[in-house]
Length: 566
Image 1 (cartoon, rainbow, N blue to C red):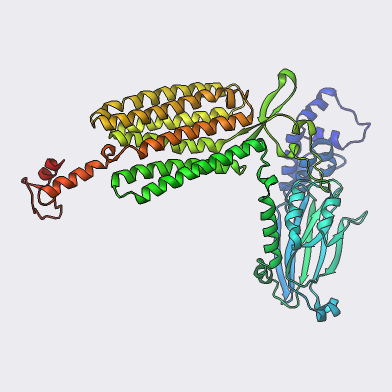
Image 2 (image 1 turned 90 degrees about the horizontal axis):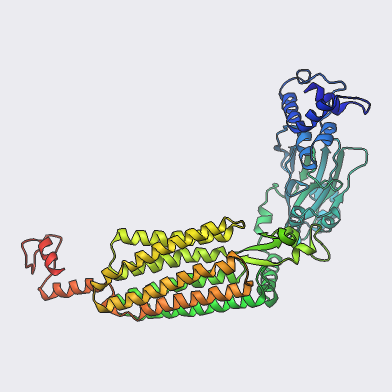
């Protein structure tokens, strides 16, 4: 440790054996952090005898990356915040080593300034609200102070641009007051009187405009003079739903509903978005029709079948609405050149150009022009529900035992999970999950075909309806598994073909399944058993009274009478 510290702090003429120098450079970061931990706990003399004495900033400039230098400069300092009230009209906030948000900004406080009057503005030094500040930074760092209110959504825009690491020239347009750093000094001090016709929150933020990294603020004292209030935020909270706020929200909402924004979804062409909306409308019509059939159906058995069709159509409609609005998807982008091209998840930071006023410095035109492909994970989420519902009503339809039904549902849901995993993986391992999906599909086919024996026990009507439901379910699942290969697997087809193919598949499978359910008839529903029990009980002159009454019983006990009715 001592030898490496001597090398990092010595003059250029200091020489060292090549092997020792290489060892220090290869272990630079762990050695430096051990030393920082040591000096923060023990006396410096116990942590290596180096002449001259080591300087954390000087060493970190040689050893660490720019983002890690701040940590070295802070050297295990714990942020602290303290608020005091010397008198009813004054609030003093003291901060030490405040944390940063975004890339290069530290918020020093937010203060509610009430509406001021002309009388107050006539005596600004004694009657106007005032912010006095004194900010100190560590050596090697500087800070520029920005003071601004929350009018016209300045705070939201400032925070967004800060996270995007925009320059101070861009951030200055949101500020009411900009206090630049003083050359040759680590302290910024001053005061500003605040006024306004309405109550506003004022924010004090420190930014390192030179390095565009987190400003190394060691301490900050901000004094808020509020002669007409108690310093709380009640006045600003009451004005949260002002006319200006409502107007801004309405304008943003109207702009979001414009045709250009509705059809602008990353990874999907406008034609594909139109197809998604068209599928949503068709599924919504189907859902409303099933609901209308269920609501107007007096027969309990037919109502149950109509409700089953309604659930299936509604889940699929919500899925397509989610996709059509640009949610529930991840964008994939083909990057690289030649044989090195590969699909990867798209980065919005590199693919977004920005606007004329705020251009994105990380924008890459070649990257943005690369081919894209949408990964609709919400589609698999909807399939989890629809496949489970189809298998549930198939088993419910034929009166399948619970153990058999659970095995079929496990294989069906597992197949969808494997499809989602195969779609999410960009490497060659996705084909292994597709093979596993194919195996689980075979298990589902076997389990569904085993239901035929239970359907035949219930007669020809049930067997016929079961056969049609089975054909619709198995064919749609099989086609979906095969369709994955050229679409999400190899991505050989365009995104429009992908959207169109899966939309037609869902329309055909869900539409045909609900049609069979709605036209199955009451004689095929398991609920008919309850109706038959009721008719038998009525013909016997009474029913089984589990409360102790034996009116109209034909057997010796309740269970025997129930057995006769069944």
